[in-house]
Image 1 (cartoon, protein in one colour):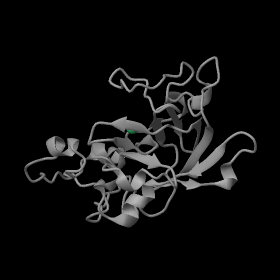
Image 2 (cartoon, helix red, strand yellow; image 1 turned 45 degrees about the horizontal axis):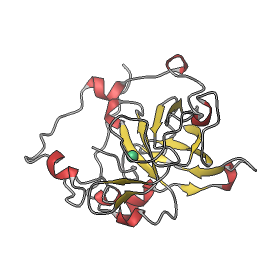
Image 3 (cartoon, helix red, strand yellow; image 1 turned 180 degrees about the vertical axis):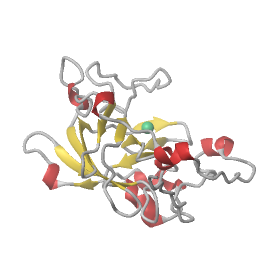
Image 4 (cartoon, protein in one colour; image 1 turned 45 degrees about the vertical axis):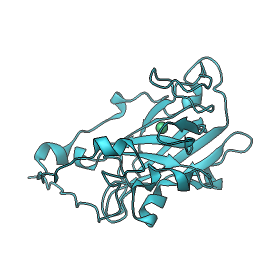
Length: 234
Ligand SMILES: [Fe+2]
């Protein structure tokens, strides 16, 4: 019979707190009663599995999803997906969504007074390769205001979803950009108490993946579980 892996739970403080009052929405969303411990079941530790047939191979390049060029600064975002033992997670689905260069999402709830870009949808997906590497070409997202508090602005960020090898390792998180002056003031970034853990959400500028005269490279490695896990949204 095939060995079925279990997954260790994270260390205290290294994942976002459910309740972080400076992030005002967390006051209503946070559970008010103690959580019920549920043991993992077979369906949570064995799937789902995705293959080449389930993805659009062109979806990794968000700058080329329409007939015209997307507006803004082209960037390459790439990295490696690893499990809690540092082993690459191959063939896992990585999805991203983001605002356009002006800081506006193509979504009916987003009524920010900034222009939409007809050549930029802001969604992409890809599979990791056999060594756990993924790569996207996209536009650097703009910062945008939100109504969490007076004069609140989100740092530039890209939303990520990763399934990993099983539902138990599914991770939804946000990647930030190095040197963004808004990061220290961001209540969502600050939901994770552990300083070292939350700084894992900031990508690194990367000469190796920078394309001359075309796009700056940013590297964002993601660890799905364990001691070095990337903080994820609950
Ligand atoms: Fe966002």
